[in-house]
Each structure stands twice: as C-alpha cells, then as structure tokens.
Length: 119
Length: 113
Image (cartoon, rainbow over all chains, first blue to last red; front, side):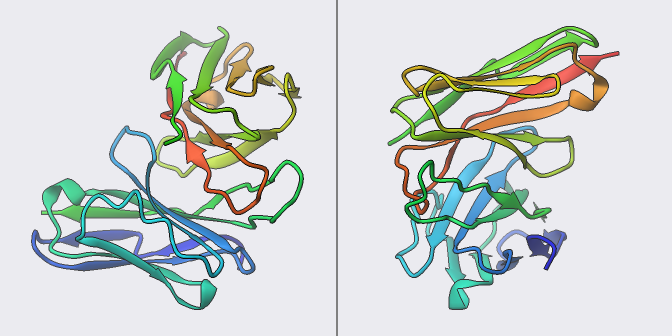
C-alpha cells in the first residue's frame, strides 16, 4: 500500500461501549506504534510492537485499553467500557526498524488517525 | 524513564520573523528526529540527526544536534504561513533499530500574517 491506513476515520460511541480501532502498517515494517492525541496536545505513547518481541505496553492508561498485532502486520487497539476522557485522535505509526544499522534510522510513517468521540 | 522536553510549548510570530524550538533529553541520545504536524494532520518526518554537533539545513530550516547529544534545535528563518504547525523532536538512546522512539512534548507555531 501507499502508506499507513487506519479505520474508521471517525468513531462516535456512547459511554460504556467497546470500540475497536484498526491500523494497517506499511508492508514490511516491523515496528508499529499507537499514540493518542487530545485536541491541541502532544503525542501520548500507548503501545509499541516490534517484530516477534513482547509489546511495550507501558503507555496504556488503564486495563480498559489493549492492543494486538496479528501476523506481524495489522494491529487492533481495543478500548473497553469507553469513557468521555477517551475522546481523542488515535494515531498509528510504523517504521522499518533497521536492526543494527549505524545511526538507527527509523523514520516513522503515521496514519491519518481515528477521531474517537465518546458521548 | 527517558524524557524529552521541548520549549517553548507555544510560539506566536509575525510572518517573516525567525522561530526556534529547543529539544532537551534527560539521557544521551544516539539519534534524534524532527517531525512536523500541520493543523488537522498527522506528524510527518522532516529529518534525522546522528552525529555530535551535526547541523543540517533544509531551505529555511536549520537543525542542530548538540555536542553532548542531549539536546537539539530547529530554527526557521523568515517564517511563512506554510510553517504553521506543531514541531516534535523524537529521540532514541541506542543505535539499535528496534528501540522505541520517544517523542518530545512539541512546540506549536502560529504565524501572524
């Protein structure tokens, strides 16, 4: 594909419902990140997948948040029992993560994001 | 854990004025990247710096990596309305490609025409 894609682009849900957000990274990219960005704020790291390694979940704000990456490609971020404070844009990014390359060049390519609104 | 701070958080400048954002890491970095996010858009990669004291230029943008590899700066000369957006730095500690990239807090630039 041409780049990182995310779906849906917009999601409106009611408080207490579960939502699933999808990310399709660039083919061949081994690293995949999820970030959350509230209006006018910076990037809040959520989770990082790298190849077959155990994901870095240190940024997940609560146990209502989980993510998986199947077959080293597509990733799904799930938010259970959504709350109004979960409203934000959820961004996915992928990178080639060239192991051992001097200088460690890992440009991240971001998807367009999913705007989540919890009513 | 590693922290990357940027100052200022916001900057308003008249069109034609210069702009600088500073990035400071709590730990020594192996490399640092810069991204730009236009309003309503997603972050887009601008450049990567690797060497101590490295300076790179892209037209009106000048990027610098500090001698101690703990800080970096982005300077824009004679700002234009197209420069509006939020600028993020992002760093890695090690040279290994599989290490997580840590983003700075960002500097939002607005231009007064």
